Length: 464
RNA sequence: GUGACUGUAGCUCAGUUGGUUAGAGCAUCAGAUUGUGGUUCUGAGGGUCGUGGGUUCGAGCCCCAUCAGUCACCCCA
Figure 1 (cartoon, rainbow, N blue to C red):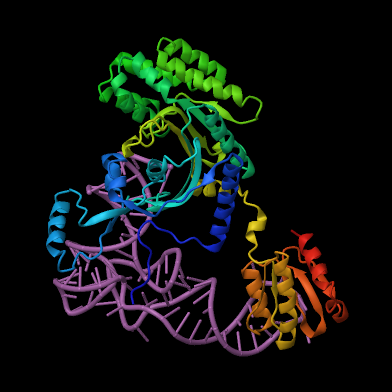
Figure 2: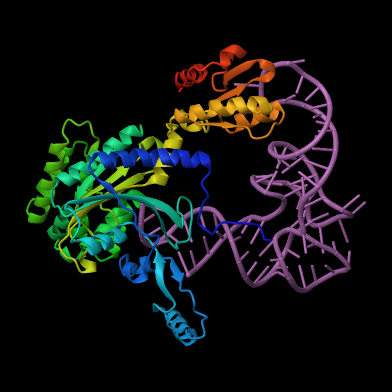
């Protein structure tokens, strides 16, 4: 038997990690719920056809395909062989692979909306937390299997949806105690306005992709790349003026400067109005919303407001979430005119941020609340009853299964980070808090009364 | 897909210009000690040195191939 290993780019998650991640997810899901979003799940696999062509040429290559079964069935062999030949030519052939693992949550959602658009109640607000798979080559912080956590609202063009989503970011990060996070906001319409302003309307996408790299490669390289792509000196200079506005401090100041620069285009005006609407609505909400004209976001289907959530500068992790508005979610599936806006939380990165800031609640470090030592048949019968009563009170507890040496049972409790142990050695009944080292002793007569479970319960709940 | 680097015990790593029987710490297990908290001591198990070739009297070490992993580019979360 060969050594067991994991497929490239996948991870096991240990109990400690899962507890912490569940804390993040339940906090975020709870906030989604408070804003009227409903949970949705879609299958791990979609028909390959559903996914192909939705993520660009590069994206198609990164889709994990699932091999069909029964290729070697005698009646299929000729078909299989032909399909394989097609595949070698770089074509898809449903006779070889007709299904694939989901690549993101947006396209399956679009597929769901397109399939059910007659039945859905609009505006339809859903959140979805599931793993996705990419056949990318993994590297630091990038995996072939990872979780996405999305919330979208479709069927409404109202900017109140954007306001809600901004508040969701704020409420979730506040609940997680990620102080110092920053929510950047921009509008694609302003970028579109910029492209009109420099007479390069048709090159919006190209320009956006370069601007999006600003954070990583810096102003100089961005200008270089723009020149290399054939933007004229004047155009690059205008883009430079635009990008410099982002350096100014106050949102109002930035808006007035961008009005000066791009106010001559109707598109930019609309974008500015969008930003002003959102800023006005969240005024006084203590939300750290920062207008950032350099924010572009790589994905090209955004058409309006775009968001990016940044981790506190002290942790140097960067983006922990993002999203934006799109005009037409389901057009590709034959159902036109369903606009939407959505956001995503980067769960893995949020985990890293919280780990680095050391802000996970300490209660997450405790696995079981009480361990009952195993000290023989007679005690076992007794503690089994107590354990049962505590569980009914929703207090987690376990009885050590074997009558091992006390030291071994003790070590188990310490290593598993159990908060309390209960032992009854030689008629000396004791509940001990391993976190604070406090002990509570009981006499045999005390222990065998009906109120005893209640006593334990109150000790435990006062130490939470 | 392109490039660079790394593969020695369950884990982290030593291993000299190529030279007897490949080591340490941690972890595991057993025993002893300790009479109340992760102690200490002793011992044991555990390795085809990623795999396959080659050079050599002799390879963990040198050469070639191959596989795996890590990192960077592209792209993205």
